[in-house]
Image (cartoon, rainbow, N blue to C red; front, side):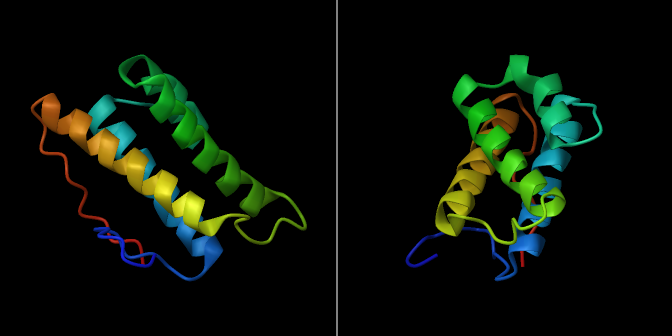
Length: 113
């Protein structure tokens, strides 16, 4: 991550990284936006009316990379790891800002290792 001032610690294992990032976004969507669904894509859809189109797009990118890594044979690593991490951090930060603006506590306690 270089000189980034991220509050998240990211795993060097791509599988662990995508799973933990997805779990974090799912948790925020469920706990703070009431999103229901089987996976991240469904939860994004459930909460989309409360989110900016750009945030929805960012999270769909993350969910797609996660799904491809988990389900597609031969897709064994994140193609652009730095972009994935950047998109995750931006999405998580924006979600937490929305929660705080609505009077919630925001601020995830999750550390991605």
